[in-house]
Amino acid sequence: MEARIEKVKQQLQSQGYKLTPQREATVRVLLENEEDHLSAEDVFMLVKEKSPEIGLATVYRTLELLSEMHVVEKMNFGDGVARYDLRADSNKHHHHHLICVQCGSMSEIMEDWLLPLEERLEKEYGFTVLDHRLDFQGICAKCKNAGKSPEPGSES
Ligand SMILES: [Zn+2]
Ligand SMILES: [Zn+2]
Ligand SMILES: [Zn+2]
Image (cartoon, rainbow, N blue to C red; front, side, top):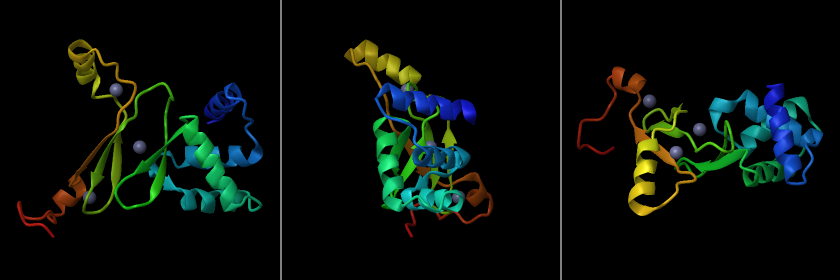
């Protein structure tokens, strides 16, 4: 945790920004809830528990700054709410998401499964991939086991 805070601090410093206590509180909440893809309001509620003096506007500005720095990625998973996804390493490509359309659960594939495709793009198109987004919508194992999955072809 401390090592990762330190890393964010360095990322900000290299761009001329300071890790103020407000920014640090926001980063801590993101790190503590890494798997959760929190919305700005979620982040604000959690930050407020520990630092009641911080306002929503400050949290918004911090999240914007962090996404400019590529510390977090602003994501939209189709429910119209912007969510913030922490990047394990700003130099690495973005991870993939498995989104269940029934229960809304989301899991992550942290490995980069697109490497063979990226090599092909480089070779065949001379195109160097810097990043990508890959989110899969489907039915998770839990929902499938519960037998709640829709009949093929029947749209609800
Ligand atoms: Zn994610
Ligand atoms: Zn990649
Ligand atoms: Zn599910």
